[in-house]
Image 1: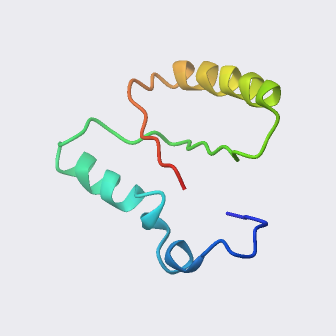
Image 2 (image 1 turned 45 degrees about the vertical axis):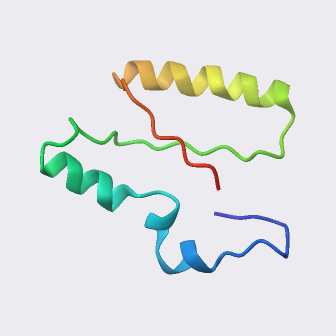
Image 3 (image 1 turned 180 degrees about the vertical axis):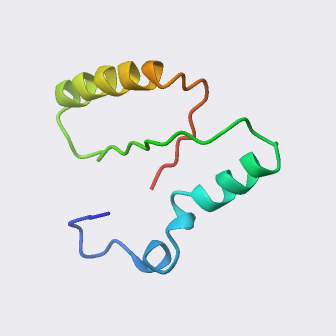
Length: 78
């Protein structure tokens, strides 16, 4: 992950990516049958972008997720 602001603290996620993208926890939950499964692909969006570009990307990603039969998303603001 990149972020251009010098004041942005990268420490936590550099030490443990699960602080922002808890894949280990989600995989554990899937293994314990607490959730059905974890998708193979994961998507991220940078907030400092032109909304028109973001809208186009959102439609593209949602189409991919439909192909993958994703029925729930986990949104993490970072």
